[in-house]
Length: 129
Image (cartoon, rainbow, N blue to C red):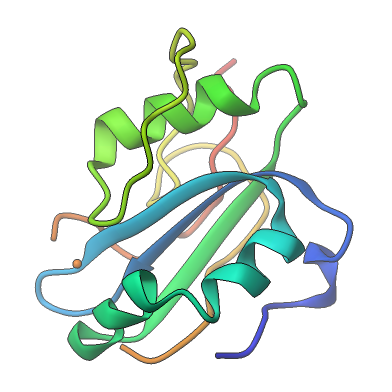
């Protein structure tokens, strides 16, 4: 599973991993240092198990540290990932969908081999205006 573009190296924020397929599904939502977290998920058997359904993809967005947990909680509540830790105990912060819509600057990247209502993202999530 190859990491995406070098632009992820110093990014701190929120990410969404999903698998392609029909249907596609969100596999994991998380936050932190994106490079570090994706390195971890490259060897996470819970995440990698979903590669049998389609190519694993990732999208991410830089998010201020004081908002990361709220954004993660919103995305977890909205997308109901297949692999989930306990959601952060914070107030959800609504963002645009990483699977289309307004704003953002990161495209999808392949992170592995190939879950239901998600379309491949065209843009990363960000706080609505």
